[in-house]
Length: 260
Image (tube, rainbow, N blue to C red; front, side):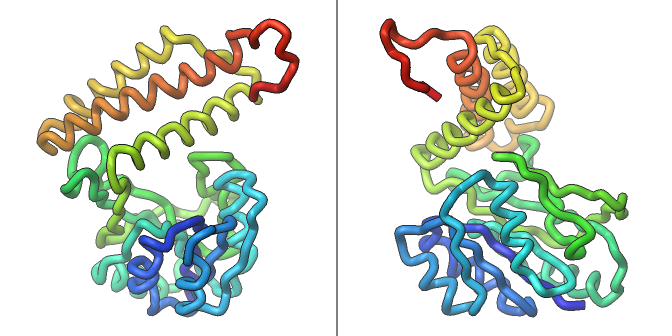
């Protein structure tokens, strides 16, 4: 059974080569670029002839669906540019494809963050569904936090081996991504008629910290665990604050523009 490694990317010149180096064994590599302004496309072209551009960004879900449509192989392995397939995971994938058993397979993602691999805090094994038969499963159209849909009810099985995830370069990178996700989350909720409150943000933020640091044993990740719990609590609060601003506050007097 043939396999396509599929990536959606934008301005990933820093990560892309290291990622694709771990995917050269795939039968097909598909890279869909969202309008990079760095050397992303040039780097991708060194590994594959299937580099396409879709710069009219409509969300992660739609972009992944567009990438899926470019695949010719039997199976799809969806990978992000800041991830790396370990040798053990590669062997597990190849053994699975040899069995030719239709299913959706989850990968254990091990994240490197702020100077160390995070093995607690609810971050590991962080199983993500990424290996699936083309045409029998596919991503939904969510703007952010997109999910792999399973319309046929295929069995979901785990693979051995880790998918390494190099998440954030620094604190600024974390905050920028967090703000982007908070905005997308609030946009989706507001579009469905949901309303937010600062009180809900506080409650959910505190709950997030307690869950990550205590229930998920984030304290075993040392200072990184404490920092991640605090930052995640802040990010959770920011989502609800963004939604509250969008749905509960008024524009300045005389401002008739669309603020959102």
